[in-house]
Image (tube, rainbow, N blue to C red; front, side):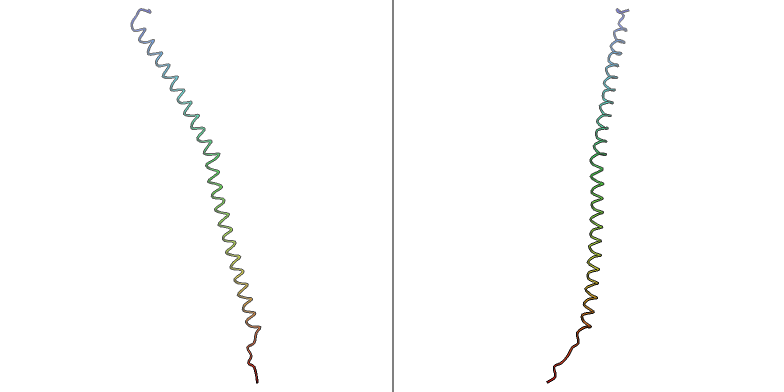
Length: 96
């Protein structure tokens, strides 16, 4: 049986096939590990950075709106105070 030429050919194909199969399994495992690490990096670092950035922009916008409201209120108070002051004074002329 060992002397049969087809046996050597089949044995070589089977051995080569097993090596290719092992190589393919190794590649699949390696690629899955790399994809897992990339996904972990994205979910642990990249997404939180985007979330923090959007939260910071939202808080900054709220602060700007609050400052605008405060300025409008101050201007309204100054306008009402200036109106009251205008009415308190009476123009007069000196009599000789």
